[in-house]
Amino acid sequence: MSNWAKIERVETYVLQVPLRRPISDALYHRTHWHIPVAEISTSDGLTGTGYSGVWAGDDLLCATIDRYLAPMLTGRDATAIGELWDQMYWSPLHWVGRAGVAHMAQGMVDTALWDLAARRAGLPLWRMLGGTHRRLETYNTDGGWLNFPMDELIADTCAMAEAGWKRVKLKVGSGDLAADLERVRRVREALPAEVGIMVDANQAWDRVTARSAALALADLGVGWLEEPLHPDDVAGHAELRAACPLPVALGENVYSVAEFAQFIRADAVDIVQADVTRVAGITEWLRIAHLAQGHGLRVVPHAGDMMQVHQHLVAAVGAAAGVTAPAMIEYLPWGLEAFQEPVQVSAGMLTLPDTPGASSGIAPEARRRWEAPK
Image (cartoon, rainbow, N blue to C red):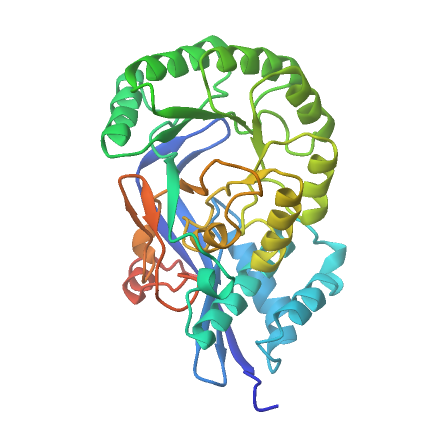
């Protein structure tokens, strides 16, 4: 009983952080990034932090924790992470959960419990998980948005290359495939040959359009095609992958290990982009990563957490056995000023922290500046 760390308090709040500039992809136009936060305080005087990253619904995530999960957690042993994960998953929320709000709220709590565990161990999470990768390659997503005119798109991506990034990602799916391909072609011509390009359609295409686009993008030397189809269309992704040479990446809108298993069994994915803020936390993310790696697939997460937690997870799992590509993570700098210890990236390389925990702690000044009223 002396090894227990009793959960004494669970608090939630939301930060609404303005973006440096408005951005658009195939689905949305955005001006702010919303960060719903869960802080769990324990009897040993520690506080662990979990959070998500969304454009809307942050109030639903916090309400789910406040009304359903916090009463279940209070008084329980914070070190029993797996036991608590199972009990949250199989609670009455299972009727309305297994994806979306209930699953993501559970993920916020699970991440806070892992943060607590690493803080208690006096280790950064990546070390506690057995990681050996002290540095990670990043690819930059923040310059390729659909609302950027051509000159700004080219200037931004070239600036990224000059700053040291070896890979950049562009948005497509505008509704005009010819215009999408022209944007990719112009950027390809402007960038040095050694800088790779990936593209992201954000679910905008049907199967016919996706196949035409994939063949054309392969001819332009694109590294992967991300979310070409609806995220539930396993068969469509499998057909596309079989018909085209371009690797298929997906996962930011796939919410569970069971769903990822369907894509993997169907040979429908090459790059697994599991996001710890979309699945039910670190516990489930690790299951997905190990499943993917067991099938020889790369895990390159979507950074809905602004890389803070994912840096630890990628450093811990590395690349799949036999895969020579580097361990890699997406670079999205939104809201980094909200964290006590923002990720450290220079010349496209991320250096892992030595501070205990999951790098999820929120800076007090950020809460004062951007906390939204409940």
